[in-house]
Length: 287
Image (cartoon, rainbow, N blue to C red):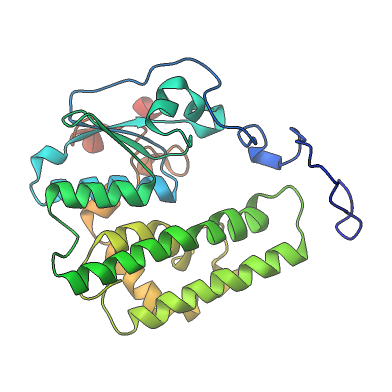
C-alpha cells in the first residue's frame, strides 16, 4: 500500500483483486452472474431475498408494518442472501436484480421483480395502499425524503462507514471528509424533525422506514460504533424520532429478519411465517 501522500493515479486503472480489505472478494468492476444457482421460492406471494443490512431492514420493516395492519396479502418469505459468500452473484439473483445488491423482491402474483430498496418500499406502498399519502402535497413531501435518503445513505455507508469502520487502513482525509458529511446530514434531519413528528409530516410513512435503519441506528449509537465520535447526543430530535420508531413492534420484528450477527436473540436468519419469531431458538439459529 502506497503512502497516502505519494499515490499518483496511473494513466489506466488496473483492478487489484487483493486491495479492499474485508469486502475485497465481493467488490469487482464487472457485473453479472459468477455461478449458476436458482433462488428458492416459498408459499407466499412475496419472495424477498435479502440480508439485514440497513437497506435490507427497510423492506422487512415495511412488510411487518403491513402485516400489523392486517394486510394478509403482505405475507412473505424472507430468504437469506449471504453477500460475504457472493450469493448475490448467483444466476437466480442476477435475474431479479442485475445490480447484484440486496434486497430484491419477486411478486409471484404479478410476475414482477423489484430491486433497489426505495423502489421496493414504493411498490409495496402503492400495491397495498398504506404508508404513502394520497394528497399530492403530502405525498410529494414524503417522496422528497425518500429520495433524500436514497441519495444520502451512500455517503454514510460507503463513505463514512467504510473509511471509519471497515477500510483496512485509516486515512485522515477520507474520514474527515465523510464525517463532515454524516454530521451535516444528521443536522438536516434534526432540523426537520424539530418541526415534524416524522419525516415528511406528522404521518409515519415509507420515508421513515427507509431512513430509520441508517440514521436512526446511527443516532442511537448502534451503527459503526461511532456514537461518541459523531457526538450523536447533540441530535436530540433525531434521537427522539429514532426511539419512537424503534418502539414499534413491527420495527422490532423487521429489523431482525435475515440478521446473522449480534446477539442470537436478535437474529432470525429466514422468515416464512409469523410464528418464526416465537419459534427461533439457539439450535435453530446455529443450524
